[in-house]
Image (cartoon, rainbow, N blue to C red; front, side, top):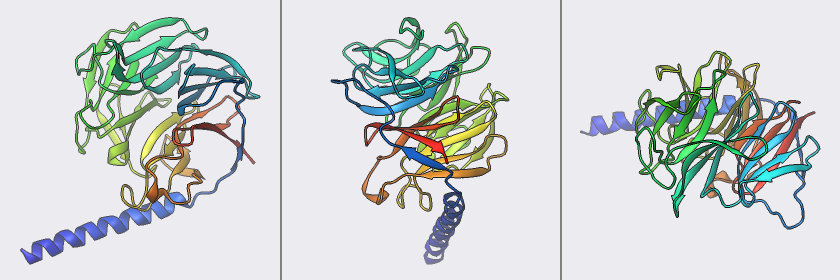
Length: 325
């Protein structure tokens, strides 16, 4: 028994050392960006809630989803607020995605008073074009979600929803056709291949591969569009948000790593290639002591037409812009 316990202890120490070495490599990348303070201009009387998601559109504007009223905000490249909508519609704002036709997709991750647990498609003017899920009802069927965290749209219009947020919620990816018809779902709770512990974010690369930020397992899992596991990446840390540009540059924000949950990794935005997983840059979070905070920095990440990077910050309740030096 002593030998067995000793072997287990040695294995744990080996794993911790390996993670620390990996973390040292991915924390050492250069930061070619500088922070722009107070970029977004909110009108008098409007305040930020928890800022959870951000995305850029083809016109160069920036869309933000936050837990305040109104929750959906559009800014121009100078930070001027152009449009807002969605007052009173959501229980917990979560995922945001702008598709190639300019439609705005958002997820509502909780249920209350007959609302929530849905995915919405809006026109840029704020008209509801489609809803998925049953309002106010949690479930794991073809017409229900339980904590939909994010949504991504394929070029052909197919819809992919990362459904789940830990605890007793779901742990799956749900696929729909462009008209909202259920196609399939895959995944379950766990840490094995194709299993999830908080599928917090989802994105597609130029080859159509589905990248899922499996946050509780400190990894990105990559699938084909039928749910076949292709790869597993640990080098991007504990992923809360993923953005993949047209050229397959991948931006992954880690909002939770510390010595307890993902030893060796620092919080921040890692920038690399979705083609081979190599990391080229790292924008570190400014939190001086991540071991004392659960989530403080950016949890969502987006990039505008000019290549500027945006961090959606839940804890600090703000939107942060980063521009290249």
